[in-house]
Image (cartoon, rainbow, N blue to C red; front, side):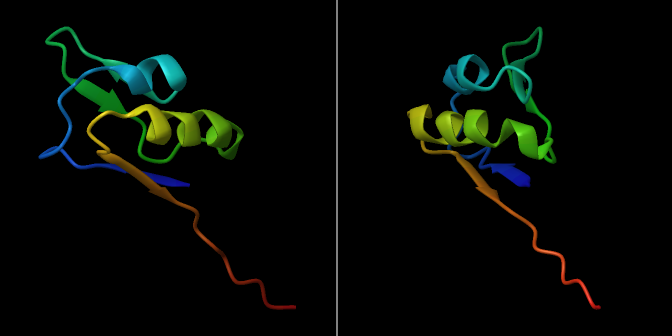
Length: 69
């Protein structure tokens, strides 16, 4: 999974830190920090963070790996 936060839209409200605290946090200056490649186990929390972001600044995608057999 890859997360992207549009820094032009993000207003550091911190709602994502409540929805997905293992992925998003606010630093000492109140600015958002996040893991751009969280574990897939965080999927539901990341989806919730996307939904609750008032600025709609968070997006994510799943990487697909082709397997040759």
